Length: 197
Image (cartoon, rainbow, N blue to C red; front, side, top):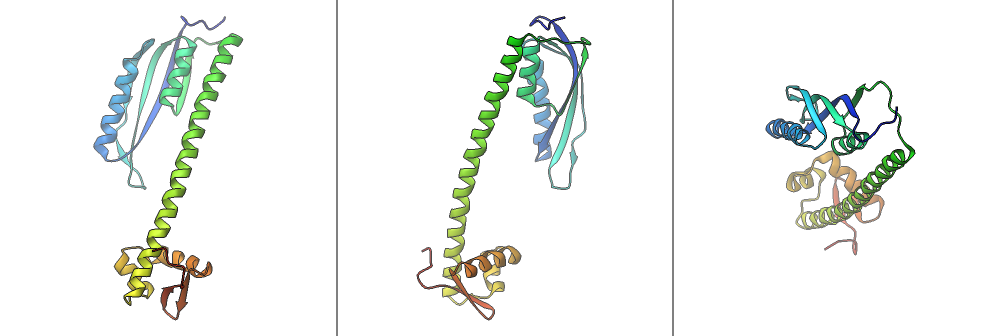
């Protein structure tokens, strides 16, 4: 049997949502289900939305289990790309055979999605690197200002900057190691000519 674009595929899928606040997660899962219901060539037979629950990282999660009939393998593949179900189980037909042209199309779509994900990841990495450099400069400037007015101990720097003492100590230690700051007893100061101002 060859999977034609008109063949009906009965399947179950689980789609998960993670985020905050709780109300946003509740609304988002409903919007996802509604969007699937409005998708051409997909008929939702049953839906079961789990209650929203908090997790240890102060985020909220929920999932929906859907029972659907999807018309054609291409629609099934598009559904997977668009909604990224955490689980998909094909119930009927028992066997699916795919033409080589369909399989080529699936792999081409997959490659296009992977290239897009790679592009987004590279862009986010570049933006993250730029933000890190800017934050480092900002922190160096803040330390230079605070130490110049006599707030030079780790405790003072943490108190007046609002930064966690442990994280600030790591940052200061890296500045000392790179020769950008000097530690004199319990106090720090920026090395001459190393200020970012």
